[in-house]
Image (cartoon, rainbow, N blue to C red; front, top):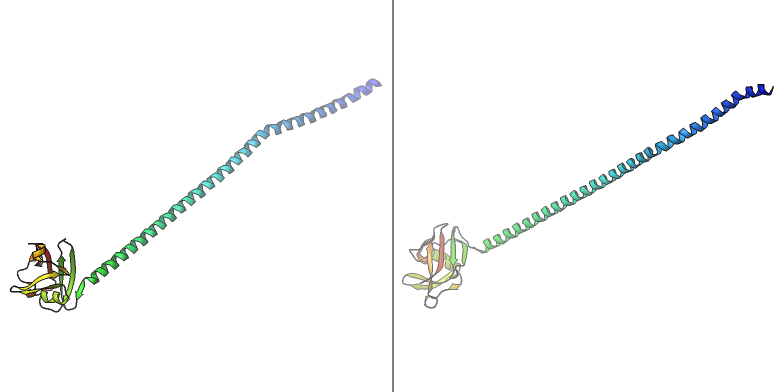
Length: 206
């Protein structure tokens, strides 16, 4: 009877032991699998972190580059604007100065126009634009108080031109009269005006 029960229970005990062994084996394999997968998971997480860092770094570099380009562009625009304003201001001042000089050197009234130049002993040159209705150069210049002199047997002897007096006895110089850069063949008071011609008095050594 005892032998019968012993033989009857043996298969059940064996099955129970196999079930327990299988359970432990499954748990062990699962743990081993999780253990093996953990480094890969960690590696994936590290790679994702690096990707995020790279993205952040790239965005930062792009922002910095964009800011730098914007600053450079703004500076360039400001410099260009400043240069343009300076050039415009300088041109305006030059034009104003030139207009002022031109206006101050335009003398007289009349339909006839000519150029009158004064060159002193230091070779300083002053140019006037004369407008007149007089017939001779001498009459026009005397009317505008640009020349003064004394009457002589040869006509008007000019001693003062544009407020500058030259005395031949003291300075050893005189005022020479020129017509179109050529030494005049007649006196200033007898030289008829040619419209748009050029006349000059130059201080010269005797």
